[in-house]
Image 1 (cartoon, rainbow, N blue to C red):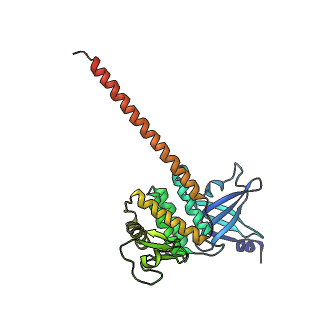
Image 2: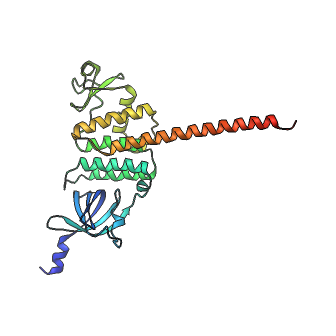
Image 3: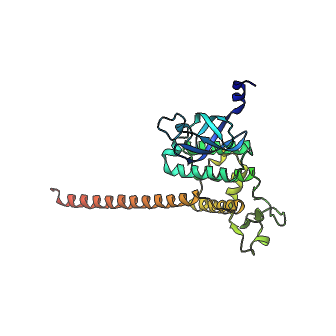
Length: 289
């Protein structure tokens, strides 16, 4: 085989989502990427931390990119990179960036190396696109979580009792993490490890699990129901993943910080309006008759 043919056999092209990166040596980066056809890959991008690198801007987190890769002895090497979708807004907005990091952390946690899942890949790409477009991040991510669980074999049973197989009635039911689904009151109310499923919460979970995104995007949830759904899915995911994730804790801290900032701004606005009204009253009293 001539050298040119051998070189071509060593090359392959993939479209990939950059899940994470870490520094390697003085100028290189290790990339964890998710591909539709080859699954999750760890690739070496040599020299991308040098100022003159032409690949650096194409392999940022959340980027959907086309890569030309050369097979290596221990790690395959990124030789070319071209952005297909930058998802730039996810890196420019800290709030949306935090949700996006959770999305890719979940994708990394629930996938094995070189184990392709085209539907999962599409779900991750669609979710990043939705977050980048400015949709309600909580809705987009709850939809993502439920459909991710279905694709990796952990879909919760939300319509029938996993103990007696009876259809669940419109009353407070219970979720068993261990059994992977809901229990009717007769079989779930006396178990301390179960989680109560109020009727509105169960309705939302069912709707998100069975309806297309276009319908889910129209939902308007109360803050209380939204947080209950979030908490239940978080506990379900951690139980089946058998470890905690890093990004939810940061997301919660950021949420608390933004809430405090909003409260302070509201108080300052209220004080300003109060001072303005007082000044107006004084001016009115001193105005010539």
